[in-house]
Length: 495
Ligand code: GLN
Image (cartoon, rainbow, N blue to C red; front, side, top):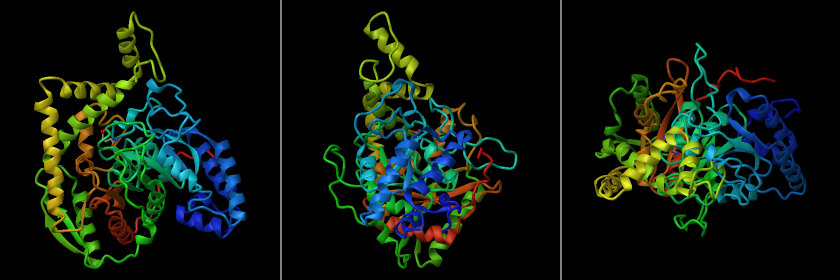
């Protein structure tokens, strides 16, 4: 590779191999990304760039590479969603209430990545406390999708991990960390033509990740390819005694699972995912996905997930309920911003009223209401019962199949402000993704085609609990068959 070829075009796997072959240095690779990030303000993907830290780490990586002492991700620059605590680097969850909070500790997932030699380019935009599907609830303002249609209307990159998806789509990092509570990895990946992998609940430690809804939250990567996602997950995953829900289960080399062979795999197609008002092109793409899998030797089977229609209502009780408890800690005393008040109760009210945005306040009100005496049984307990039924639906389906194939989202990227006005419309974005979180299963979105306006669409594969190897193997076959190679035009690049 020559000095002036664009190193940011490489996949993470290619960059890894190029560094090992000494085709370029970690410092050269890192500088290429730093320059692109510096020219990408219009996207508002990074809310904090850390170029000096990145270059220092790259220098250390070059030494290790020269010494033949390279770790699995040595010298590979990535972005980090601002929900992950990063030691000495401001972490805000994109909320005013965290102000300039600078953790003295590192999240387990990012620590795993740094210990494997990856390096951080900066912190990425997201919906405030990961609540949203468009990245518009961020205190730092919206992140813009690098993809546009001919009329150049600004589009959302999905959410809550909109900064992560936009950064990967715009080549502002080889990959990015993200989190998914109801779809926040897979939906933004689908809307930006990237790959988003939500692992099984418990696969990655939640320690040091700002909590939204603890029984649903899970970290995972957004990357350019399935292989890159597998490489990232191998580093991010692993047991951690500091998260009691982290699974004490060994982490395979997920990349080694990508054999390209899915002969005999049973791919289930849930009838209940044929929702009204789904554009016909998504329906067609889904059918195309089935054909691709069948051509690769899989068997397509019809399955039923009968409680799917109750998933969104159950999620929008459980997630706000857990959020109202998790976010009680932001009281103006322990973290970040404080607004003075007449007495302590007033100080809490002033601080929380000014520090939380509208969507977060809406969730806290719903959650507190659902948990309050008299309503607990009617709403929260009911939602938990529905959750159990949804998990059982999947267990039954997996008696007939090994993975499930569905669309990732009911639409392509939409215009800024479009869904913002109506919270219920926004919540509908998660119709195909929340069930997976409620059941704790792994899911992946693979870019599969373009809609009539030239915007990316994703297909989702859902696996069995801790079945990421099979899931990734199937996803890579789907990715190869789809052959998605389109890229957004670089309207944002200021360099
Ligand atoms: N869009 C969903 C919500 O707003 C999911 C968010 C997420 O997965 N963090 O709750």
